[in-house]
Length: 435
Image (tube, rainbow, N blue to C red; front, side, top):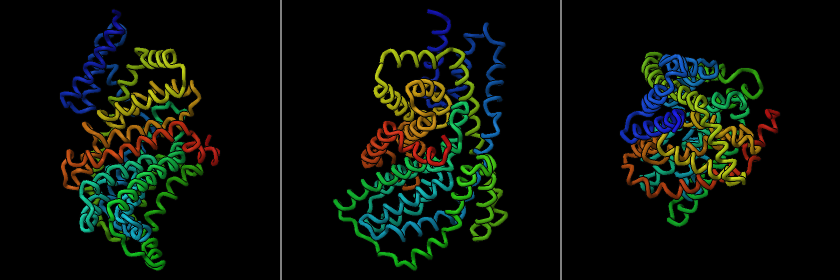
């Protein structure tokens, strides 16, 4: 057995062993990479290679967008934006059967899109909607399931930090602007699919309808939410139009959110210190994940793992649909035990050459891999969104699993549509001339 094969075995065995021991993902990645690298010490300058790859991995202007979007999302979460979006959503759909569940979904879609964070959407919307839904007879487990799955739409509908990470991992073959505009239809489709299942539940269970809002009430709530919604137009519109880059857009998002919070009176200047500290902690975690993931990704390339996997898939599965299905299954499994950021950074260089060889556009694959991993963060054992949504609803994870399963099935069905019907993702990028 060659030293290269032993190195690969050590890499994967140590990585999965550390995960099973509940070592944090970033440390698991870093330790596994180091152990594997030690076996190749005669071919490399030394352990300084890891430090160099970690440093160069985050030496990217595009990555500056992530801490700013995190900060913008934290400001929006602390401000009254969530309440305004919920009231606007309620005025639109609360009169339908299961109306409050629709409000939960629509508000999660809007807040997730504006903040760019599924966790922020789940905590901000879930903390308000769960009690309201319980008052009208909805089980807290159903509210949590709706909130958990609907919050993932914000990772597809721009601005989305994970799409920026994918743009970096793709090596520039997919632009941030194209990915942002490509995420709209899949994100909306996912939201509507969840609404469809909620409608089935509401009708079969006989949940009450809310009062139909008058045109004046809809207009009043829209006017109050208008400047919050305008952020989407400014950020995404500016990027697509080429007025500014994603990084510059993230700074504009912070300034806009801060001004909005101050004007509305939701925050005072002294409140920003706490928000800055919270954002700094989140940014540190994300950036450390990116550092170690980039080091592991480089080691994959050094060992020739992407080429080996590509050759294996192309030789053993000569049907491209079978290969696409196999990649989806692998990504679904990966998503159950790995956070989105390292998964995107590690597995994009492995699978992107395979799918592009078979004719899949890198932008299309970006939406596919993100939706795959969106399902992963809703499932145990890692399931960060699952734990946040359950915690906000004040129910245990085990109680949520059963009512959550049909929603996960809906997400998988949407994933299959998006995977095998590229027009869903590529229509808008083609329309705007981004491809």
